[in-house]
Structures are given as structure tokens and as C-alpha cells.
Image (cartoon, rainbow, N blue to C red; front, side, top):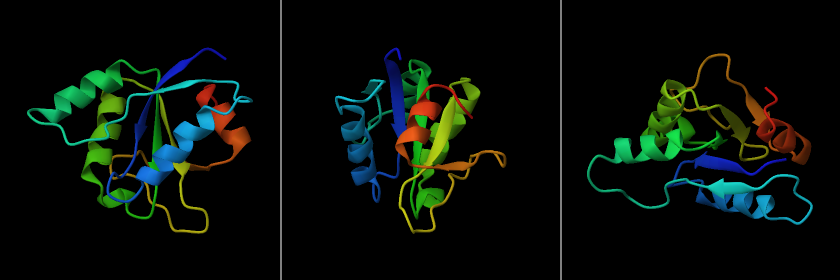
Length: 129
């Protein structure tokens, strides 16, 4: 599978560990894909939405890691809205097994949260929805 430039959207205050797990998983030698993480890991100055828009626009896909507080993470909601406006494909992953994970506020009603399994991740990165 060709390398996918990926924007990882996550609740920085609660789910940075999930981003680290996803990036680590993508580096496993058996992984049939590579991810180039373009997510935001620090506070941005100035017009942060335009800076994020540029990053998202230059990605092939966005992975949205959903945790227990994702619906309260305004940055995640903005990032998903930008992906929708820029026609960047995205999918939602259930980040916390056994927990009540939430969609971002800007997710579409038809957007489902997929289980974070190896088979699902491979299929979703490959374009399955």
C-alpha cells in the first residue's frame, strides 16, 4: 500500500496516548502501510485554523481518534469541519475499549465510529467505509 500522509485528530488534553499508540502501530514491521503524522502536537500562535487547514489539505486521509471527551474538544470539531470542507477523507476510530467514546460535534450523523482493530485499520486506511 502506498504511503499515506495522515492527519491524526485527537483530544490533546485526554487522548495524546492514543495518538502515540497509532503512530507506534504504523511503524510495526508487518504494517502494510506507512503513516506520515501531520497532526498538531503543540499550541499554535496566530491564525491556527488556517495553519491546520494547510496541514489537512496536504494530507491523503484524516484519522479521528475518539475518546470519552472528544465531543468537548473544540479543536477536533474544527479539524473535522476543515476535512469536510477540503474533501479530505476521514474516519473515526473507537479509542478507548470498554469506554463510552464520543464523536466530534462536527461529525456527520452517518459517520460511524469503527472499532480499532488491525483489520479495520488496514481496510480504513485503504479507503473502505
